[in-house]
Length: 147
Ligand code: DQA
Image (spheres, protein in one colour):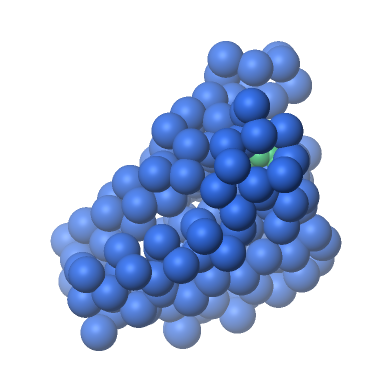
């Protein structure tokens, strides 16, 4: 059974109560349960992690190598700033699907730039919590093709 990681960054632990008009009412544990069930239905083991700390996210990407076939990554605000996350993806050569609940291109200009995008397979944004299942499908298809 293939195994993938869903990795969420800063403030995503507050999903459900954080700016629900932008991020929706679904909590992080709802999202994670949805991801696990979605993976199960596709014969893929989904593990979920969240951290508010940039270094912990870097560590999680490093640790993913050899353990997971790929990562769905919502790096939150670190998306727009983190050369360290960019380098971690580059260094591990992990297949990453970048994911955002909101359409970052329809928001403030500082959200238009992604440090993840140049090193990701692709990006899904703007579809709310369902985006995680779209990202999982994209990642599962990618790692299946890569075999
Ligand atoms: C986000 C978008 C980011 O700009 C923001 O900082 C987040 C959440 C999203 O899922 O839409 O924390 O990644």
